[in-house]
Image (cartoon, rainbow, N blue to C red; front, side, top):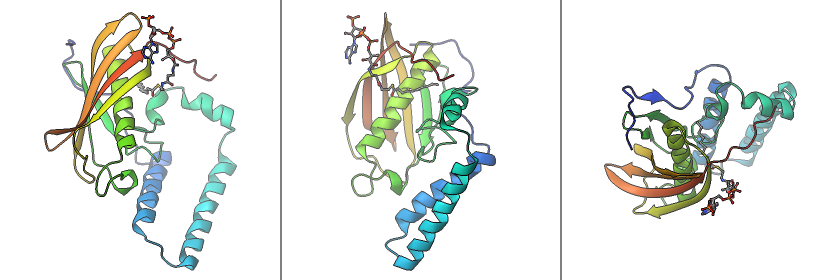
Length: 209
Ligand SMILES: CCCCCCCCCC(=O)SCCNC(=O)CCNC(=O)[C@H](O)C(C)(C)COP(=O)(O)OP(=O)(O)OC[C@H]1O[C@@H](n2cnc3c(N)ncnc32)[C@H](O)[C@@H]1OP(=O)(O)O
């Protein structure tokens, strides 16, 4: 499909490198560092666990109540601050940063490290599915008609490498009533590693209020 847009548009929240975003960046480092650490000594790891639990206790003590957090997180920029693929507030997000292109598609570039490993040196297939499900969803948003994933068909063409630049794309193909067809791919070094075809159904769950 084509869309009369002239400039690529940011479709995901930008990390502010301060406040919670900076804390999340630090937490991502902790996750990667723990994976690199090996067993270490029991004493060291006990101390690390105690310190991390103290941080979590501090955050929990000062956080608003969960129902208030649910309301707050769906206001303003909505999902883009906290989703598990692009969100700068979400430690498990790589994060992928997506922009809308003038041909109506969306695209982002990301390199994935050890926390996302499946086969040796390569990305876990479920992580690829996560990236593509979300990217197809954002492509629908960019195209103007979005919905919930009803079917996601993945083809794993070749192993997806860790530590290399991956390009993740999504494009809405067709809308037929409430049925939305969308496709996308993850490529590395110009070769398709994973391709996806999605069926989305136009439906939106109510936001907490
Ligand atoms: C900037 C923001 C970006 C946000 C990006 C976020 C992306 C993330 C996307 C997700 O991960 S969404 C979460 C994962 N998906 C779900 O949890 C969906 C769970 N399933 C449902 O809620 C419902 O089953 C669904 C909304 C998919 C459909 O239920 P409905 O009751 O609304 O639809 P209905 O049963 O009336 O069916 C409507 C049509 O769709 C068809 N259909 C429904 N589900 C289908 C299915 N699974 N496969 C094939 N066709 C399906 C159905 O046959 C029918 O076709 P016809 O109109 O021709 O009769």
